[in-house]
Length: 123
Length: 131
Image (cartoon, rainbow over all chains, first blue to last red; front, side, top):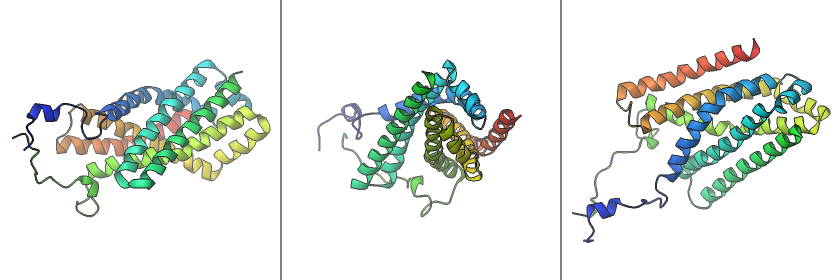
C-alpha cells in the first residue's frame, strides 16, 4: 500500500514525463499549417511547370518565399514529431531510436536545403 | 484506495487487424498517418526542385522534367490528395480533441467527409490551378 492520495497520483506529467507537450505542439502546428497550406498549394501549384523564368519570378517575391519558408519549417517539425508517434507505436529498442534519428535528420536537412535555395533565389 | 487498480482494459483499436473488425473510424484515422508519412517523397522532390531553381536554368530543366514526367505527375497528384486528406483528417481530430463529435454517428460522418472531401478538394485544386 502506497500512502499517497488520489490527487497526488494524478498531479504531474505522467509516464511520458513531458505531459501533453508533444500533443500540444502537434495541435498548434496543425492549426498554423491549416491556415498556410491552401495559399501555399495555390502558389506552388502555379509555379510548378511554369518554366524557369516564371518560377524564379514567383519564388523571388517576398510573400511566396516567406510562406514557403514557414510551411517548410513548421511542416517538417510537424512531420518528424508526427512520424515519431508512428515509430513509437510500431517499433522498439534500437530500431526505434535509429528511425527517430532518421526522421529528425531528414526533416532538418530538408529545412536547411530549402532555406538555402530560397535565400539564394532571393539574393 | 490510492493504489492503481488493475482493471480489465478494452483492446486498443491499434490491434484492429487481428482482434477488431475493420471500422470506418479506425481506417480513416490510420490513413492520416499513412498520408502524412507518404508526403516525404513530395517534400524530397519539392526541395530538389527549389535547389534546382536556385542552381540555374540548365539544371532546372532536368529537375522539372522529372517532376512533370508521368511518374512525377503521379507522385504530385497523389500527394495533393494526400495533403487534403491529411488536412481534413487533422481538422477532424481537432474536433475530437475539443471533446466534440465523439458519438459513433457523428464520428463516422466526419470520416466520410474526409474520404469524399479530400477527393473533391483535389479535383477543385487541379481545376483552379490549371484553368
